[in-house]
Length: 370
Image 1 (cartoon, rainbow, N blue to C red):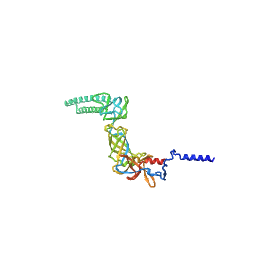
Image 2 (image 1 turned 45 degrees about the vertical axis):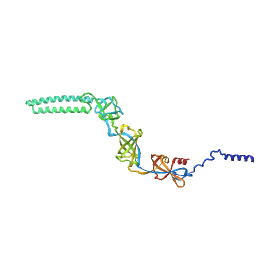
Image 3 (image 1 turned 90 degrees about the horizontal axis):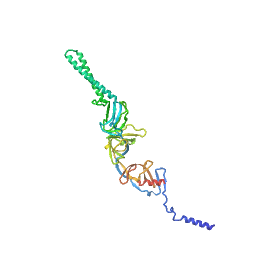
Image 4 (image 1 turned 180 degrees about the vertical axis):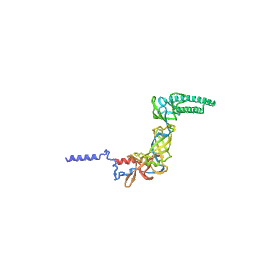
C-alpha cells in the first residue's frame, strides 16, 4: 500500500508540472482595487495604460439643435368665394404648385344669378329715369311743369344711377364678370405658390364666408424653421443673428437662417423656448415637415482642450475621460464632447489643456468591469 501511494503522489506531481498546460505560462490578471468613490480605481500596473497630453484650441462655442421646416404664416393666402352655391369643377388639388391667376374651381351660385338680375333691372330703370328727366327738362323749359316736378325727375335719375353702380359692384364682389352674365363663377389663385390645404371636393357646397377656406396657398420661397432651445442654452440665441442650417437630405448644402423670434414663454415640461428662423428656400429643396440641424454660434471664443477621440468614453449617456491620480489610481472625469478635428482629435470641455488622460479609455473601462 505504501508503494502504491508513492506512485500516485508521483503521478500527481508530474501532472502539475506538465508544460502543455495552457494556464501555466499566462500572465497574472491585472489587480483592480475600487476606491470609496465609484469614479476612482486603482490598478496594479498603471504603465500598461498609455497617457496623452490634452492639447489647446481657441474655439467659439456652438450649439446644435434640431428644427422643423414650417410655412411662413405671413405668406399663406386663403382662397375663398363669397358666392354661395355648388362646386361644379375643381382644377387643382392639395400639393399642386399653381401660378397667380390660375383657375382653381368653378362654382354655380344662385347669388350670382340674382345679382345679374338685379343689375339688368337697375340698368333698365336708369334708362327710363334718364328719359323721364330729359322730357321733364323739355317741359319745364316750355313752362308746362313746375320746378318741383323737374326736381323729382332729377332725384329719380340720380337714385337709378346709384342702384346701377351698387348692383354692378355686387357682381364684382361675388367674383363674376359683368360682361359675361352667367350663374357660374370662376375662382382663380390670388398668388403663386403651393396648395398646402384643401377643404372642398367636387359637387360639394359652399356657404361663402361661413364655409372654411376652399384652399390655402403658401409661398414657399421663404420658410420658417422652428427649433426647441433649452433654457440653459438661450445665451447662444440672439435676435437678428444668423445660424448655419444643414439638411439631412442634402448634407453638402449649407444654408443660412436669421433668428426672427424667440418665444417669450417656456414649455413648462421640457423647459425649452421656441426659436424661429427665417430661411430662403433655394430651389424649393426644403419641404414642409423636414428635420434640419441648426447651429448657433457664440459671439465670444474660449480655450478648450483637445484629446484623442479614443480617450473619450461614452457611458450612461455621458462622456468621460480617465485622468491619472496618485498611487497608481485613475479618476473618471465627466466632460462634454465636442466636434471632431483632423488627426483623430476631439474637442472636450471639462478638463484643462496640458492635463494628461488615458489614451484609450475603453480598454481601462473594460479592465475595471472584468
